[in-house]
Each structure stands twice: as C-alpha cells, then as structure tokens.
Length: 300
Ligand code: SF4
Image (tube, rainbow, N blue to C red; front, side, top):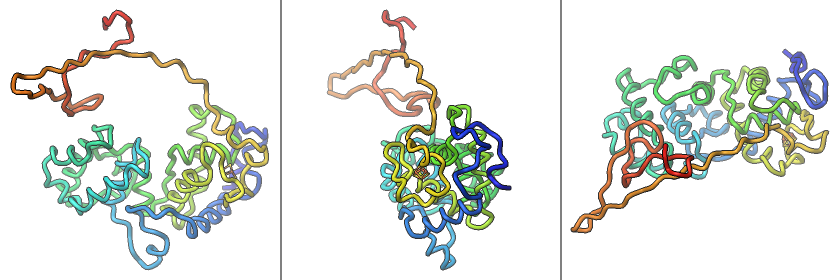
C-alpha cells in the first residue's frame, strides 16, 4: 500500500505522503545505502557475510539487544565481547551462577536487565536452547518487550517486524513531517514503519533504519546532503529537520533527597547491605540509605 494512503496530521498538511516515493522505493534506497555504509558492530552479520550464507546467531542478537536497552552502542561493545568470550552460547550463560552474570554486567546499569537476561537464558536453555522465532513467542521470555522482540525477530530470523526505537521515530517523524507530538504519534509512526518494511531483507532494513538515525539523521545537525532518503523526505523541504520529532514541553522534575550512612568497623571494613531485587539498582550492594523524598524536611 502506498504511504500516501495514510490520512494523518503532517506539517505539509497533505495526506502524509513523503516528498516523493513509495514504501518500496524508500526501502530499496535505504538498503543500497546500508550495503555501502553500514556500521561494523561486533554482534552484526554484515550484508556481505549474509550474501555468503552466514546467518545471525539468535543468542548474540538477543544479548546485544538486551544490552543496548537504555545504553549506547559504544558502551555496549566491550561488554558484549567480554560476555560472548566468557559465555559463547546460551547454555554456557544458563550454567553460570547469577552472581557471575551480575558482576560481568556491573557498569552497564539498569541491573534488572541482567537478572532478566539470566532468567531468560535459563528458560531458553531448559526449552532446548532455541529462541522462539515470532514476536509473540519472544515476548513470553523474561526481559523481552515489544521493541526487543521485534528487533530479534527481524535481525535474527528475518521476520518482517516493525522495529521502532528512538532513532527510527526521529527518521520517520522527519520523513513525513509529523507535527503531532511524539508521545501521541507513536502508533502512527509504527504504521509508517510497518508499511516500509520490505518482504525481502527485513532484518537489514531494521538495522539500516537504526544506522541512518545514528549516523545521518542525528538529533542535531542531520547530514541531509548525505542521506539516501533526501528525495523522500518532507522535512528537508521545510529546511528545519531539527524541528522533528515534535515534543511536548517537559514538566518540571521533582528534586529528591536522601542520606547515605557509611559505617566503618573497628578493623576498617565498611558495612554494606544488599538492595532488594526489584526497583532501582535492584540486587546491588550499597551503604545503607534513607528513602528518597521531595520534601524539604526529609519526611516521606
Ligand atoms: S533528509 Fe535529513 S531529515 Fe530527512 S531523513 Fe534524511 S537526514 Fe533525516
């Protein structure tokens, strides 16, 4: 279906058509660019390798996608290499104590991801070591939400899934000059992506969109003159691509305060406790603290 069939609110006031082109043309332009300019990432099987018959390892795709939740590519690279060296497959990770996984994860943040990673490895290993191939099946696993399920289905199994992260939201908002605030436009953006996903190479398409958002259609000063989609992009016509995605003004965040207590034993040891498994920094060790409060008098 042509993209301009979609009726929605765009800056140009038309029916949502990009400056030119249909979904198939956008996908083929993007894939041609990806073939030449893709990023080399330690978890990625490049187009030239795919052409030689090398298939993505679902374990590595899953591991990278979980690590990349809330974390940058640069921060993840060294952790990914260390994990696959220590635990080359899901059975090895499942056989390892949770404490070891938490230690290897230390520094990546959002520690509930590490606990879910281990729980997921345990479950998949118990079920024969094979990941489900569908988004619905993947979402049944611990720590795998809608985005991660779509990314694994597309990249590991070449399923035509719409993979929509912040980079992709930005690219699509600009391609179609979507003036609806991003928080309200997410389902429309997903529809656009669903229509663009090609029947062949959907995994490469997902990764190409990610790469375009990370390297060309960046939040500040997008490099439109190098963009393979400049002929399709309505934001470039307006000359103000940075205007998109449109965001509602942020509400003021409350400032919260707490107190930490450092107790030193006579022999110099510092007394620590383990946090509960759920919530902020769950399962990590810490010096004892009060709760966090926004009240000036410290009351909760
Ligand atoms: S032409 Fe510019 S704004 Fe449009 S998708 Fe490409 S980089 Fe983004």
